Image (spheres, one colour):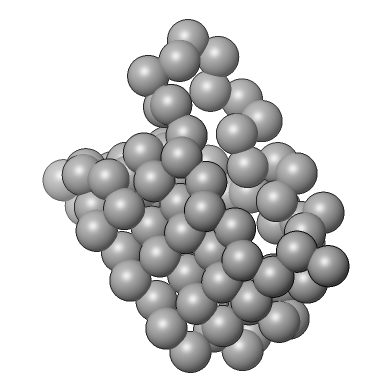
Length: 93
């Protein structure tokens, strides 16, 4: 079973759809490091009950996407987010 995943994503690619859509297939993950991705929409990661460490670096993030990712990981003990750009909610600008 896969327990640790380090994923570097090219968010500069023209087709950004599906970058993390299959992450839920690795439901046994305990540590997940994501680099260079765009998290603008709420993703359905599934329930990642075993995930304890989530690190997101160099990302473009939207609040709803981060909230959705954290909600999918109820046992998260260590969250580190190094944001390249934060997309605020509409009306918060």
